[in-house]
Length: 203
Image 1 (cartoon, helix red, strand yellow):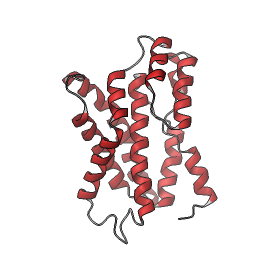
Image 2 (cartoon, helix red, strand yellow):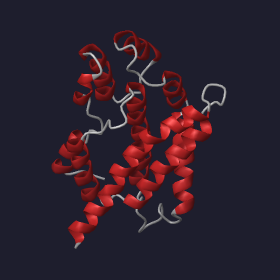
Image 3 (cartoon, helix red, strand yellow):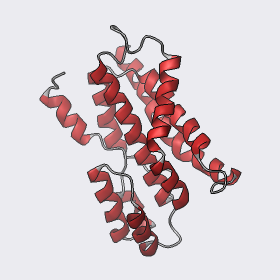
């Protein structure tokens, strides 16, 4: 599926996380580690987490949780994907929102990226970690590609549920689990708002 130059530009600009607002709590060196990981689109490594902890003591989130989510990202995404397929039968078939297969694969990759960005928020202890500008471009991108927003929002809810079910009880007590919810709910609310914007455009 060939993408237009306009869509390719939107893909580049559709950045979920904004680190500039973290300057009041994190030194530039720590922010640079987060930014480099985001630029490279990878989950924070143990070494990177250790660096952040040494540079910004007292301002970080639960690294043990971040490590668990990172190490179980595939299982979490697989569980969320299974939920979407069960809730939206036919979505992979001709005429469905995730047909042809390339669209479905892009959706599952987005789930992986959503989860990655959520871990940045958790690691930085920043619940409002998103970029309004970047999400604006993502909304335009999803509109241009006719991404099925109902399925995407459902999938994000599934990521939250799957994450809570995957976390080791020995390393995450009830309080830890509850503390994770705002990071997921923040991004869910932002993505859910795309549907309102889309309806306004249609009207």
